[in-house]
Length: 481
Image (cartoon, rainbow, N blue to C red; front, side, top):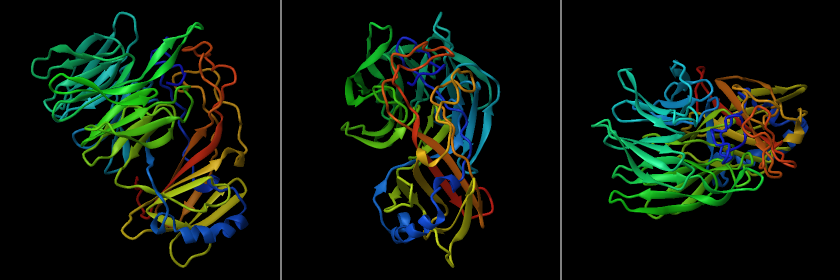
């Protein structure tokens, strides 16, 4: 992963997970800072396009649904709640898909909480990464009745966890070992080995075990390791046969299974640049692969719910994300000035007065934008992404932090635009994510794994654009997407 104090804990392999400061909620105001006259001039093309309802190419996209501070574990519990760990806060949180709210699920501070999973009985299992010296890692079992116990101990760097249909627990260790904890006997055995470093695991209903290998690294003379070959996804079939299912993934991080489809998060590209992570779908029978999402910033271990939605966290951008394969976005032709790309679902926007629709206004500094929101028939809410070049905003171009701590453990954190918004009905929620440039190579790092680490000379990940996510629900209560 990216460099950052959380090295998690691979100072010799440059495999790291990092996080960004909590992103300020942003309103759509800052998205379109062009003069209103220019926006009005563009309204004809916008109205003609009618956003997703009236044309445009379908595209995949994930949406932010909750804040998730420096998070590396996601699972869907028996009741449908999405659980995720917060490493530096030492707690587990829960996002409720019915209320759209986030609560602390387990407040007791427990250091090292990393990957987690749940079984059909309602038990939750959490891997504890407690360092490298003396195999201090453990797996904590939190039963449905609230009782807790360490069921696996004396391990190092547990990563993703998965449960099979019988309630047995599979544990990935970064060193390449795959352990199996037997639910009936409470004993632990070694199931298989993979090429280290290893991060991801998932298990099918018939017993096939899928494992993702991060990448193959080469030790350099300068004292760091560099990815030499991309990682692969292997499958161990019930008869014990192990084969490569799919390949070509730099920094392959974690897996989630939904039906016959396997979803893989890759953290970054070979050069460990920001916003180069992917969400890839792999056919478990043929190995055919398709990149669904790109420009993700260090996506972490994914999880799937019963409806096929995929959840994952962004380790540096502090977000819990959701991807719904059944609900694509549409590209909007001819977006407004200064908008590089616009995609929408559930409706469209007009920028000129309209006898129908819901009026909204957005203010950013001295600029005010007014428009009207229009829902598609049968839609209950509207989602919009607008990518705006960074030069449209007067912001500090330098990173906000040069030394790192538990709240700000990562480099590459920049000032974000802010704005305010009002709406005649319902709520508008806007969140901004930076789109960082790809300039130079991060490695070899200077002072890697310390509060004063810095990338190699010539490296930059200053934002080249900002991605604004806009959600509108036409009701008086606060709805989540």
